[in-house]
Amino acid sequence: MALKGLVFDKDGTLFHYGGTWAVWCDQVLADLSGGDAVKAQELAAAVGYDPVSKEFLAGSLVVGASAGEINQAWADLLPDWSFADVDAVAVKHLDALPSLPVCDLRSLFQGLKNRGIKLGIVTNDYEQGARQQLDAENIADLFDFVAGFDSGHGAKPDAGPLLAFGQAVDLPMSAVGMVGDSTHDLGAGRAAAVGKTIGVLTGPASAADIEHLADVILPDISTVAEHL
Image (tube, rainbow, N blue to C red; front, side, top):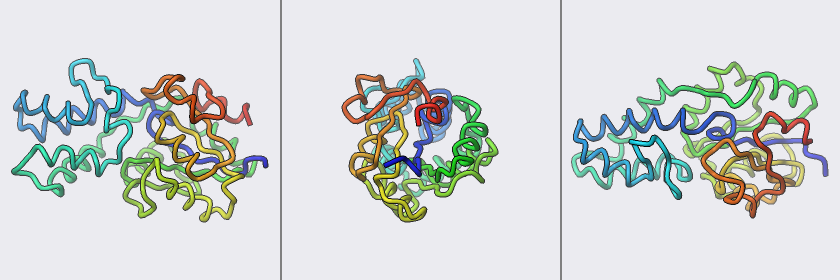
């Protein structure tokens, strides 16, 4: 069946990963550690982030887990902080989050929209953060569905958010494609039995990391329309 809907991951797919989330990690860690370098390193290690190289390590929670899981890992190391306290700091720094798009997003998504393709964003970030970034790139109006880990549909790699997209746009999952840079993205696509899983290489993962879950791997999303 031809694809009539596409669900995109956000970070590492629409936006370059490190340039966005390394900045966020540095800001949040500075607040949570209160300037204590040892504590900052401990908190960074707990989520798989190297603050010296600004790189995310294999299995990093920041790359794969939901924002709620990341915040819980930090709260577990901060006996004087509640989960709500940590969450408030994490959300506060979303307001200054830089967006580094991988291509001309308006042109890409407008072109897909003009072909009658329904568009969705499913991220393990906060829904609020996703909407802020889409607004900043002037593309929010092109999406039929936006979900974060906190939107009530679950989080990737579970199928729930993708199934919610299909229901929202009235499409069978066989007519939906999932586009993402990580095993969580493509695993969610497989779990939801989408028509095609499309991997891209603009996140931390290599082709070898995702090839077992991807029906096709593209350099980036700029070639998605051409591929279809």
